[in-house]
Length: 278
Image 1 (cartoon, rainbow, N blue to C red):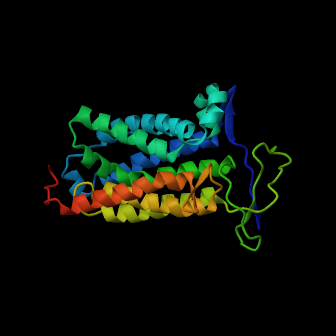
Image 2: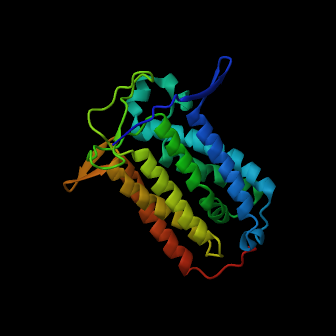
Image 3: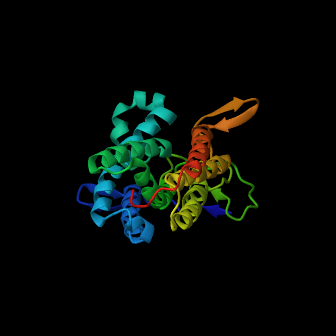
């Protein structure tokens, strides 16, 4: 059995300015977007579409706004509307954690639509281009959740080698107070499965020309399936019963992604082949 390491959420301070690990994980995520994007634009079928390094910088700005605004609004509206209605000023305290993937996903879709319109790009090509660049950024966010000891997992068998004693929400750093039972370290599960594993598959798939929207649809499908699975190890924000079967909030939000992605994949592979330059 392991103990959560309980690192200080503040990475370093410069005078009165406190830089949090959670924020640094987002910086790392955006850095990975640029680094992977520079590799992606060198792939022959992507280069044929005329992508440039300057596009990455511009897209990153739009994407950052989409992730932060959409992610925070998703947390407020999907998961904790009552709490934030009582503490409205905390909506702006993004450095403390609390970002919804599904809200950030919608935010990025909207931001990329605005960018595509501005640059005269076909929106589906934009979605296909960025899809392989997203999963590792998601993994960074989940590592940030782990550092903040957020999103505790469900109770785990103490004999599980990686079962973890998890700090209570207000546990002091000097004298940690742990939950009574060991739990699954669910943020790490999600970083590895929803993030790293999905990245490996989508990146491999995107290395060759595919029908328009196929890459983007595959990412949505794999993430939805991975998230549905890893939700079984995480304490849900809320849960409902459907025909006597418990469904968590994350699973409820992932099901439409799975259905929509299957429809998009079917649509992509039934369309006539399109030249990469179009």
